Amino acid sequence: MKRTFTSILLYFFLIFTTNTFSQNKSINAFTNRIFDEKGYRPLGDLKWKFKTDGKIFSSPIVKNGAIYIGSEDGFLYCINEKSGKINWKFKTNGAVHSSASIDNNIVYFGSFDGYYYAVNATTGKAIWKFKTKGEHWYQEIGMWGMKPSEMLMDDLWDFYLSSPVIYKDKNTALVIFGSSDGNMYAVDSKNGTLKWNFKTNEPIHSTPVIAKDKLYFGGWDGIFYALDCKTGKEKWHFSTEVKTGFKGIQASAVVADGLVYFGARDPFLFALDTETGKLVWKYNAENSWILSSAIVQDNTLYVGTSDTYALLALDSKTGQEKYRFKGNGYIYSSPAISGNTAYFGDFSGNFFALNLLSNGKESAFVSTENRKKYAPEILNNNHLDFTYVSKQADLSVYAENQKVMDEFYKLGPIVSSPFISNNTIYFGSTDGYLYAYNLKKE
Image (cartoon, rainbow, N blue to C red; front, side, top):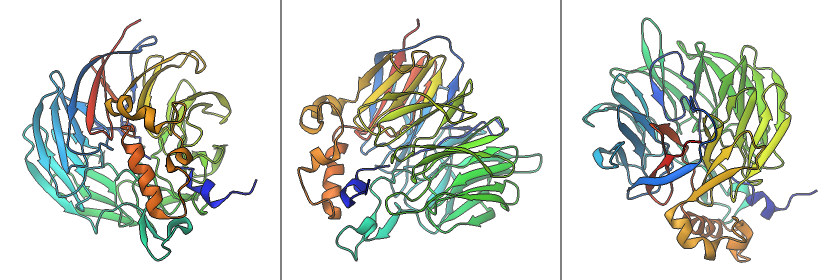
């Protein structure tokens, strides 16, 4: 079926991002998203919620009784895990859409002010900062043919900045992160001096993944790369398709059993051989972007999609679909798994607990404060609907798309990915809240 311009606009976006434990004791917001619990654990009562002064796109991490999360208000926050009260906040001069990593009591993260920071995790005092050539949303002139054709437009669905990961060997410790300037940077973890950089053709907003001395990541150029962690030299690369409305890799990868998995806008989920970069299988996402980062457990891969509103369960060896669970909007939040339960949010402001043994049939959810307030006026039959909200506006005009996004943001969409600690699950929302919910036991 021939795709119209308007239909292109409906296939949407994010991060986000995933990581493995990369052979060291550092912790990342997308590190270790499988937690060792048993049974189905639905959501319990709200433990507390903490309000920032901006949208939250980054994901929380928990370490030593403290939660670290960034906000569009320009601060990285350190919150007491038990009370939900602030320990400290660190000010940058730009929105903090990067999630943090922690190693040896140092928190690493990036900001739209063009710097990546190292901050003492206990005191919130700056240790060093590294200046990139500038951080920004992905941009094109006259994106997708929208008007005015000469205008430089931000991609409205490019929510994240790359989050740092830590690489260690016997001689060195590197902080590695992508940048809007097209570089993957590796800097000394102690002082922030540059050790190497690898240049691509477009911004890199995905979070890199480390496995067996290799660094895996994709960028807005639509290419997925494998580099040597120590030197930054390319091992191999794999090209996805680049076409209007379906260009780029925003999701981060996951590595399991000799395969590296990642989603793209083109719109497929890929499984490549980690050593050679050769395609093993790919899954057709039905014109839905895959921006959620996958997670693998018990030979099953779980990942969210955009316009099909699905959390997919795929056979990790073959890519065969086992089942799908449908949310109420785009699923950009990357899932976390505890026992038989997957936790993730959607763009309508619902946060789900899905029983993985129910073939997608048993679930529970909670809603953001803003969704409870604005759902009746924004949602169409309780579901996100871009055309419905646009009210027959001319979607070839960029400003009309911005207006729809502003309406969506009223719902408190969840693009932040959850983190579980001490029988509590934490996630951020674009309503500005960091939420903490207790988990029930069977």
